[in-house]
Length: 104
Image (tube, rainbow, N blue to C red):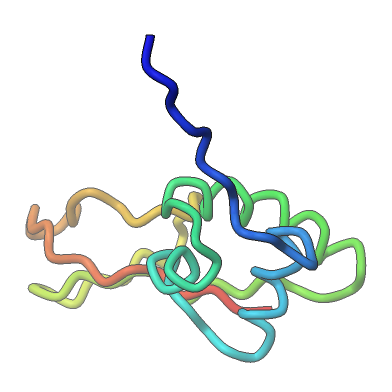
């Protein structure tokens, strides 16, 4: 067996969720932008955003989601409850879709 060193996570002074909240307060960002700044995967960002939505609502604030939009036909996913970017447009079946933006 080889001696592999365990990767050391970066030192954090606040929780990941609080870091995300402080990033998106008044500043709309996509999940990709958030993942780059907080150093976690985009998939993890969506999991944290689900919890942030509940936490922020308890404090009297709202997690605002700018809905994704199809770049080909302009269809806006207004009624979508999921936070993730949709795979394809229901109107034109295109997959060129802008990411949703999140802010508090």
